[in-house]
Amino acid sequence: MISAAIVIFIIGYVLIALEHKIKIDKAATALITGVLCWMLFYFGNSSPAESEKALLLHLSDISSILFFLLGAMTIVEVVDSHNGFSIIAGVIRTRSKILILFIISVISFFLSAILDNLTTAIVMTSLTAKLINDRHDRLWFASMIIIAANAGGAWSPIGDITTTMLWIGGQITAGNIIAKTFIPSLMVVVFPLIILLIKFKNQKVEYLSDSKTNDFPFESNLILFSGIGLLIFVPVFKTTTHMPPFMGMLVALAVMWVISSVIHLNKHPEERLKFSVASALRRIDTTSILFFLGILLAVSALQSIGALNSMAEYISGKTNNIYLIGTILGLFSAVIDNVPLVAAAQGMFSLDIYPLNHTFWEFLALSAGTGGSAIIIGSAAGVAVMGIEKINFFWYLKNVSLLALLGFFSGLGTFILQQWIIG
Image (tube, rainbow, N blue to C red; front, side):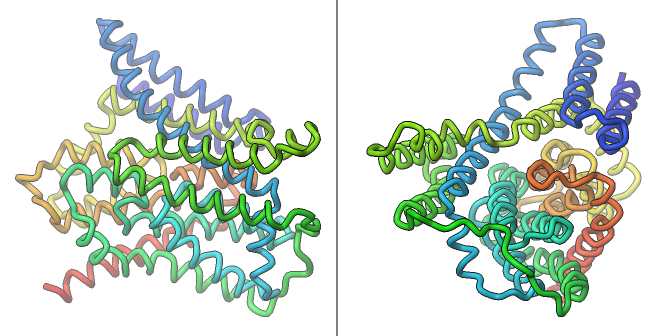
């Protein structure tokens, strides 16, 4: 059963990669793959009730991610409909592509540590669309956002779901993970960024893609700062209430809904509808959300069948080198979602083996958080950006994957060197 599930997953993965060749939307392929993998689990389990229980348990986790994504994308869409990102774009006066790329990358790196890599990727990709008109250039900028957002999330206990899992699971503490992984995470960004800065050297932005005038500056500013404040509120909500992040995002969306309704109360119904959250919900890319659903269903099925645990056991049986184990798991996170991989590692290696703040957990947070950048569907940030900018799987694989891997190995190497220096 494990072998059959892996074969189905690989076939589905290949068909997703060939989306533009076979002319079948990746969302449809992902959904079919997810359902087929779970069918195998049902057929191999004698108890339908137990199978349903396992499915619904995973679905609760998956739904929390999807609702989070839905809320974040809607808030960003509301800000964009009010010309909010044009205000930020207007502040960035430079026409130099390398300076814009540098600013975007730095903001993405630090913002993802405060928000999370998924929300940051959505916000920064939307902002970049206001700064860069050329689509080919935007693909490079969006790819750098993926790398920077994933790297920025890895060193923060609230920036990436896997780092958060290790924090909540008692494997790491907040202060220690920041101290040990900040510089290595920064190196993940530095080397790919240097190469792209060289690529865009002496190039100028011809004109901005957004030339619309702002007839309602007060409303635009209010929605912009409300949106940013509400997104920052989400991790604060999680920390103070201990409720899942998607609950904070739903509250943030509801408050944004109220604000956008109140400021347009005196306008014509058609004008109110144009700026409403209801209208924003119609404009968000729901196919990306369905694609995400299918991928997570397939991965959760592999986890339930036991494929991920078998892989973790095989790796740990072949080597006791924590750096090699962490590197392999990080590379696998480019193909399989990093959440079940880290969950499998947490189950495989107890705190008796690797206690609180052990080097293994710190290295795992870094590798699992940044390894997903190697393939565009290897991280939530990548999937979101892929949907927004319609990035081709093979374009990213051909042009960006080596850059992402350069950053990945630079970060891991920096971590190991740092540990060797510390002793």
